[in-house]
Length: 351
Length: 253
Image 1 (tube, chains in turn blue, red):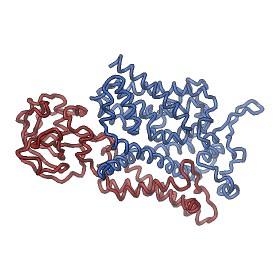
Image 2 (image 1 turned 180 degrees about the horizontal axis):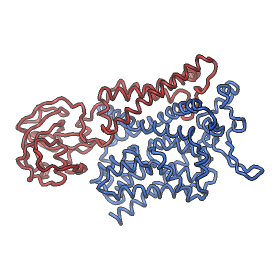
Image 3 (image 1 turned 30 degrees about the vertical axis):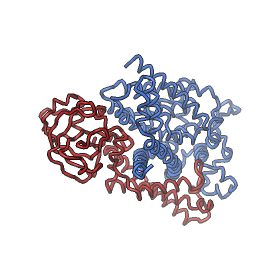
Image 4 (image 1 turned 135 degrees about the vertical axis):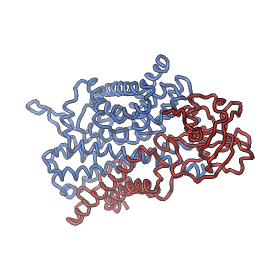
């Protein structure tokens, strides 16, 4: 390690951040707007009950929210806390970074000469997200797989006497009449509980308390507070992920990753590894992949474009804010195997 | 310490967010943003910088108003930390933003180019030709234009005698004799994480020692074909060589 490499790593690190922070900010703002200005419960109710259809619908919600993999995590976490079925949330989490207008446009710009890459990217991402979401729907109660803070905030469906489904959060505060709306008294009255309060729970409670009837300035304050907190936490994780990505890129010679293969199998594995390491935003990763277009198989480029937005070092850091490591491992394994299988078919039979 | 961070962390948030907004705008102002990302994405960074500053200002105003109303109440500014212990997330953000202001990002140099495979001149077929202009004067072509042309029609003999005038930085190729150097540019597609080098060999009249690696040169000469490292390739035979300052925007697109 010399100072030159160190400076290179720092420059890389900064460039990843300069590129990713605007999208992170966009995601945080979107998720905040979604939280306070859109009635998500309506959206949640519109989701199909069938797990397979739900997973598909979840995968398509991305088209409404043009966020990359830094931005989709807060939205997915929110959807989970709103009580969407796990299939919808997982489908959204995996597909949203790819299935959205901005990414489609960017990929189209990059691969105009190879339109099959654009459409296969969309198709594969949709298929994998739907399948993985469907698989996760077998786990009826996702809470054991979630970080405690998120799990606590998930509403449990209760049938009341009239048989109408009624939403209530399992959080300790849900039964009280929207304590957060009594501005300021909350922390004062319950000093013992501040330790276990966090933004996830705060948000869920606020949603449960419905901000619909509140004045705009109140909503605006909440949006501001939400933006600050999410930016701080997700930004911190983004910094750690980008640092790891930059260090690996500078100190592991790229030749080692690339020389792993030109063959149909090894090129896919190499590109999947590269995708996980580079952690580049899905909005711009097609340009990055374009730079390998001549040296790598079409299947491996697709693997990069499909797998990268779902799982990479940076995203794993962000996903740890929702899931326990076990669940991330399942997601990783399922998405990885499906990507590998589909792109191998492309390599062997299509191109 | 924890209690201190707890009390100050709303202000730490404001500081950290303002620092990031400031960093982005500072990079834009001093042109360092050119070293980090492709110009077409710069507006995103600038808008993000402005939004961050605005968010910090708004949050600061809210905090001030709360402080005036009551000194006891934590209000909505009380920390609800999940991933990081109190204040650490903001401290991390703030520290990196300050580091970013203190340590200047530098353009990549020849060592990075070698690491990223600058020597295999003919694998740079990544550059796809966008536009062709038949009547173009060859001395107007940039290094990347040359590589693009080569990609489409790789036979070096086709270019023999054409005038060349390119700018780039010097790489000492390890596998070529002392009389040769590579003139190189980095091509950026999105951000510095994906820059890749393109280069052409240059044949000098004397030893390359006069021109240090990483120095920026403008080379005028004519194209010729040589067999270097057991590969027939296009080489610029240098007639005049001029040292130039490193351009503000060292990458090409």
